[in-house]
Image (cartoon, rainbow, N blue to C red; front, side, top):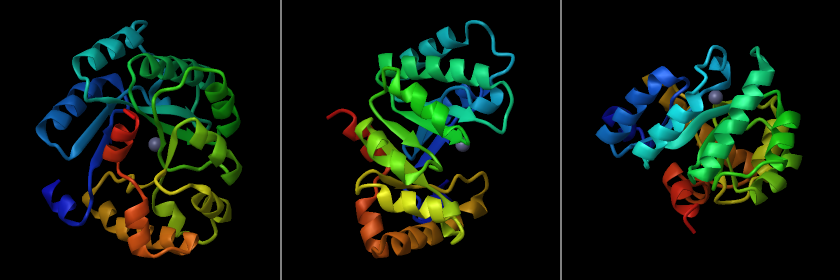
Length: 223
Ligand SMILES: [Zn+2]
């Protein structure tokens, strides 16, 4: 992590995807001030959950006030959409009750996502990781305390709709991410910032200045 930090990576958001990872994420967040941990159940892993998974999540969050809730959401390329939805709704409710920021994964399910977010109590802030929704959704999600994180996909000039969304996000609601699993992936972060700067007609320095970090999001939600 020290090596990656020296590339210019500010913070590591480490999202658990399933219950078996919650302990390791909590440990990492304790071991390093660079790590922001989040625990939850990812939409890829909703089948076969124990009946009391939500009680377990609540207990873990009570014991770890520094942890956020993530990675949670909907993914239409994976099965059990009904279970994904009910797990996601419950996780949003818990995050609202416990005043935790959430990290949201949404692939191909923006209609359902908006229906859910319009009808429930919302957490203090929502970070949409690898945001893939349309630009039209951005103002409403901003009002719902949404933050928009973009990764290397923005470097692809064929992604016209994605670029429109990058332009629609207001200053201070923009985050840049690697979505990395491996050390090498971080090297793309610089290219991602350059691409975002080009798309928004800003300079690299502007993007560094106007974007925010996960620390900022955690602080903003206290205001
Ligand atoms: Zn994801």
